[in-house]
Amino acid sequence: MDPVSELFSHSPWSNCLSPDQRERTLKSLYAKSYAAGETICRKGAISNVWIGIAKGLIRLGIESKQGKQLSLATGIPPGSWFGEGSLLKKEPRKYNVVALRKSTIVFMPEEIFFELLNENFAFNRFLLIQINERLGQFIGNMEHDRLLSPEEKVAQSLATMFNSLLYPNIDNKLKITQEELGNLAGVSRQRVNQALHLLQQEGILSVNYGEISILDMDALRAFEQ
Image (tube, rainbow, N blue to C red):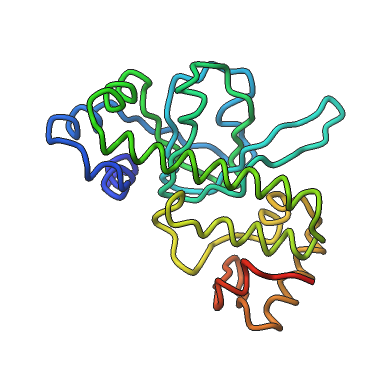
């Protein structure tokens, strides 16, 4: 199955569409590939697409004139859709979207997005729930950035990637490198290594090459030093 069809078929909102809506939507979707570190969308660009992740891992963030970076959300894994806020407000994008690894991104044109918004009640409900979850995540990220230790930031960055409403296709295993996790948590690779070692010692997770398995999700979300 090609990336577009695969992402579409595994997206929860696709199940609520009528046969005609499914056909029109699937025909409108298109995909592009991006290398690690490549910018997918820039801050200030026109918001005219809804964005889905078919493969890879991406980060939403902003950068100061001095080069300091701030992540606005944890890594967004495959199976996820985002950017509905900017589309609904019809405003320039307020953040950069960057591929943390080689990624395949699927785009839905705004015409189809607003057709579904106007025609389908279930699609509206999906967006409402997603926006509410995203708002809660952003508030949590602000708290984590200002109040938590580096080890706690790593734990919470991992925990937020296991939100079944925002990221429906992820299980208890996450393919991610320590460098990628450091970029998301805003800490050095060395501190990521220390945090993962501590969390593994406490039986919260296990670490293999390029993959982290969560053994106790409740303990990960509640982790404190």
